[in-house]
Image 1: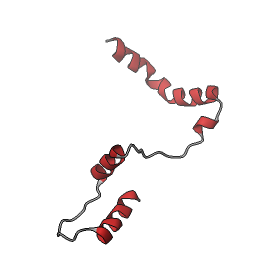
Image 2: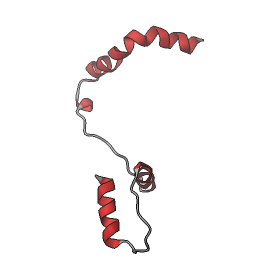
Image 3: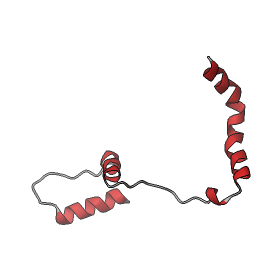
Length: 74
């Protein structure tokens, strides 16, 4: 969405020197960093009870936990 808007804006205010403006992912990341911005998604996770949240975050890791610990200790 940001990239499409940037292309439209450039086409209307561009200098017409024949240089094509490409608003690719790299341009977007640099633009956001340059302006101290970030892409974030709305979430309701922070509104839940922290104890319930911890369980839902840790549970998917449990099957791989032994292997992760072995790798860390090696």
